[in-house]
Length: 218
Picture 1 (cartoon, rainbow, N blue to C red):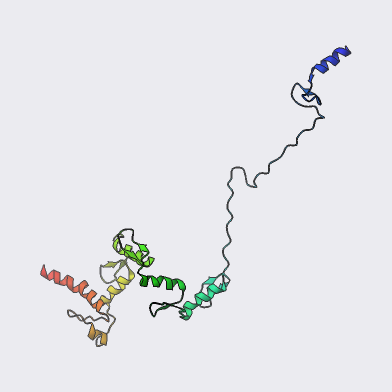
Picture 2: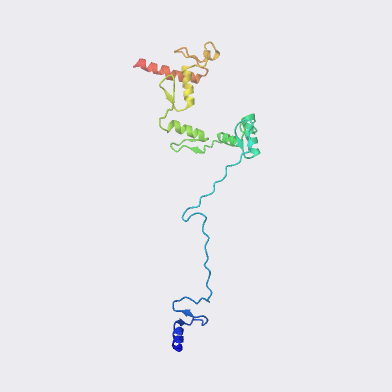
């Protein structure tokens, strides 16, 4: 009986290929064989599948405040450059004309008028302009919809720009008083209104008396 038990116990194991440790039929080594420890992979601190959010940058510090206005700057040099505008200093003269400017960027933009460069073309027509503001005004006047958000409080007319409205309102409220020098120079021949500039007189005549003359012809 003991021999049969020993044979049966020996039949349950197979010799290992190296001949050092026996391996059971189930494929698992004996308890004495060393096992590799399981390596845990560190995961992200956030939950699985949640994308990591980028960190927001703190707002820039502006400890250098202008004593003449509410603006603030990060560096003393920026503040010193800004204060030139308050003092009226223009340390950047144009080499091509008597004009001078407070900032180098203003001088560079001005010099485009002397060089003839127009780096801002209109996408709707062949015209081009020196400044982005001129391009924006051109597109608003010629290529935009007929929007006139500035109505005249004295008549049904409306205008695209506040400057046009201000020039038109001079027709209703002339700034010059009767008897002044400007009145003698730019008096309307069809009415008693007078203007300080000739262009305002012409605008007044086109706006009022030209329409009246057309009505009389009809």
